[in-house]
Length: 241
Image (cartoon, rainbow, N blue to C red; front, side, top):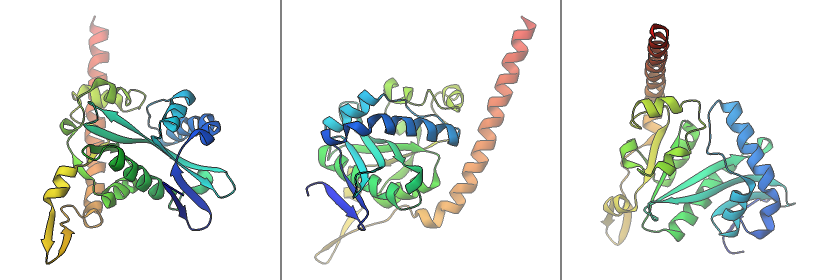
């Protein structure tokens, strides 16, 4: 089946279409519930928006071979296709820790490369497992200044509990990490060895993840302290007035 991958004999991961529209409300509800449990925000999407992505062929859905919904992800473009984001990754609680997130991300990455071969594929996340998946796909950490300047892109962060950190730092810092797959950089890191083309690895996530995790904890403490001081300062100013 075109654009379809069978994972084991239990799951099917494929480009979503009109046959999957009835899953839209369930997917939106699970996205919201998952964000609440994590204590973070997501770009809130309506079932209609999710349906549009399915009809446009810009979404990946995973189901069991009996038709039960398992997971979902969609792609968005920014700055006239210069950037592509694989957004809204969600896996049903019953199927987490089964490798489905990686399978869905892989399929979304392939779909993004097919539809927008020259685009930079981006993402922002606080999740180390997601960073590992992204790293395996060729993403590397980037500063926020390398991400889209489009206000609409950052508006998706508005529902996050850490949004004040992002806005107070002028979109320079937050608890999330920006990651990017740059096809131009990928071409530069490919070298010929005899008749073969091999890829140089510039960032080894497995070797650096423990160091990165410690940095994330330090970063979180620093930014949250700054946020707390800013709130106290503002509260003091209000009392003076």
